[in-house]
Image (cartoon, rainbow, N blue to C red; front, top):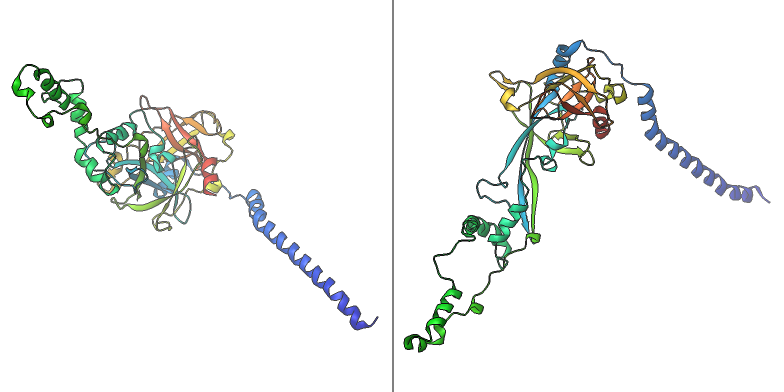
Length: 378
């Protein structure tokens, strides 16, 4: 066999070997990209610099905590029509605005808050009225024969007829119905020649009255939608920065969500974000009796608005009960508007995201433990 033919036979073998080596290198590179950052993060955690009490914690994080304003409304769709909004006065259909708290956790403007701040309609309260009666109302005033383009105008025009019909229910009407007129004519026809000789067209039979068919409740869909979510910074004078919903925890049990500024840029006045890398992820270490410090906006603008602009507040208490894996209880002062506030330990590490309490009494409040917020942002 000549050297030339030997070389030609060996060439495919070298090429195959090179392909295998290249594939192996590619696999190792991909695995490295996936696992090296996780291994690095596990063994090279940021050193926690312990702050000295609530004043230092407040000074460090006050600019990172924002007042959230969420305005939302509902849209109507009938038989799969293009959604529209109704303007019919005081009902559950008019826009509503709720306030909450959030805090910056990234350089690209991500903000941790509560799910019920990002989607308030997903967490109905005892005083929240169901949309079922709205569907019944629409079904009572919108004839089925109306074209899609006229849904909105016909509903708004006939809206108050529903109330008058409800008021007349069970009462005798002063006007005679066609059936009553027919009955009168029939009863007098045997007694007077004049009526007996009247033409048949003057008699209205009950079967001749055309019944109006209305749309079915099942054909009506009511969907809550966001009009605008915006945040105001500590020290600002109601300069609202628009946001979008970035991510929401699965299910309703973990009441955490992440917003993001439309600009996707951290405001220049925010020098320190709440660092989730130093958050207390092991909630079993949160022991009753240890300090808990909340920075937020209880009562929304009612307390936040001052002569010098919007001001965040700080409150301190203690953990009262061990974590159940989702939430932890503490006696830090909190009320409506403080939903989504960061709760820190005495060193300034995030331990929870405030989310609930009792209206009847102070001192019984709850936060979602920090690990759920950290996993949502990663």
